[in-house]
Length: 410
Image (tube, rainbow, N blue to C red):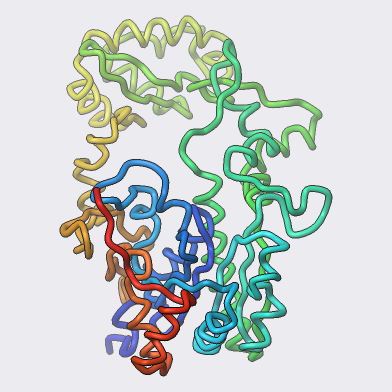
């Protein structure tokens, strides 16, 4: 059988696509990053202040972890879009780009000339993605918002946490991350439409919409029956046992049994006669008696160190996992095998490990080709590619329309 030819896709399936990233923080930038992971050329356009994530969190030599985590596979340029000469540079960038991602709110969006209609004047078939917290119009339009607030509005906080304690937020920025995946999905779908019709389009995404979509199962329970799914902590709404259990060495693991088969396997591995106990005969029975069931399983788990127990019950075909601390996650052999921690060479930090590409194309694989950029690292390089001569670059820099990288102390 003849092997398919993937010539022209050395960087990944999106080779030849250019994306402008004019967003900050997480949902927008990470969406652009995912497109870059798949081979697109991504240009990060920042103000002199830079992406807000350059000013938050842990740092080394002045480079901040949140920015480094979210902005691989990009080149960076600094533009002051309040200046007409910077607008001319921006227009040239747009004319050479396929898509633009922004989460700037109105009225700044239009004032800076990066709203859809303004951008479309530079390139008629551009794909424009606008990310907001709550939507571009409607009663909440224009409000500032982040992941945390979307969790509040969409009911995630109310449904999360132990039932005997106040509700808690989900600390990982999952709403932002899910939105970033929708950013990438939206661009991919729009590219397909443009290939067929020659037309670009505007795409709007909000954190609120994405999380409402993700809350489908609990919302449907209410829409169907009027019942609100209660908080269950680490337990399942539907089956037992399911929870986090402490072992003899003080470390913890997750065990969950969504069927009789897995419950029998667990009982056999733990050498406990619970599978024959009529209180635990079915999923419904186990849910009714889960306090006693959890007490018995918890007591048995404390007879083993975590890793020994985990090996024993996984060998018995039980659904189980360690409650891994972050250092364990980074060392995890499967995560390493999957290429989800990869090494890059950063312009200031030298060797830098970042997270890898989750979508594994077998014919046209994506990759981490570039380390997260310094602010303005590629300004001069990009200006030259756009046709600006050295004197013009010097003039633009002198008037503050553009800027290259600046020195940072640790």
